[in-house]
Image (tube, rainbow, N blue to C red):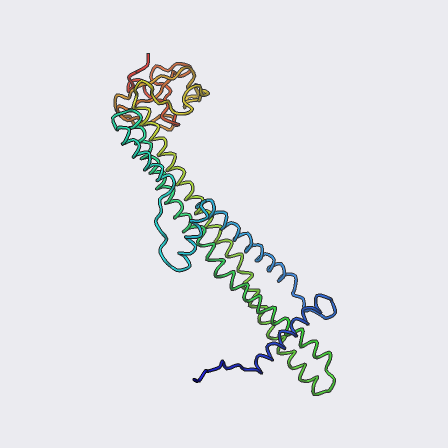
Length: 346
């Protein structure tokens, strides 16, 4: 039976071992201060420190943003694995959507005709909408902010680190050549050492320019990151506006149900007076329920849009206004015309 042994290049292994050992000795001597070390100019060092600072803070921003978007660390690990194997991430429901499903099922069990069951269903439907908005927000935030930053770390920053490593190798070669020139004894040996030094110096200078150009590109990268940050803010604003709209709609819907124990939206009673367009104070006094007789489109920012048959809360303006009352729709407030209202609470 013939067994093929691995083909080892002994000379190559010995050469690599000797090179590694010489590097260790050289670095040790530099640490001890017994040998010279070629220093880079201050501008290059500043660029290098700025790049390192950018790398560290970008990594931290990505981690913290992902932790906010996906609080479950298990889900983050799962997404990371699917990203690495280039497979589609699983479509998982958000916690709000699970809550909404449970509320809808519970409302069905308790009875849709009952006040509690029907309200559970309505709230569950709103929670599902919030959950869908949350999933859309997470996806949009990832596309416009975290993914570009991760691409920067995996691409441009890795290239900079690689080129800095090559520059360090060239620097060690240059210092080794300088040391050999100092130790050269014969004229022939000195000429060879000086030629190697010129070559090493040229390679070091060329690599230094390449690395410097890459480091200077960090400013352009940060300008790009600024645009991504603006996009993230816009996505977040849109998400929270959608949430507010959904919850205001839910509050109006619950308030319109009426019944023996009507729902009163948070913050409606006992709030401070506000001012209308003419500077007169509105609010004050006890809130009363009123049904809207027909739809009304607000004529200005101080008025509320009304929908036929919805129930809102109103109070007298201060001083009293013969044509308008102060109205509340969930967290919205503004003037509403008296002619469009039917008072329910006397």
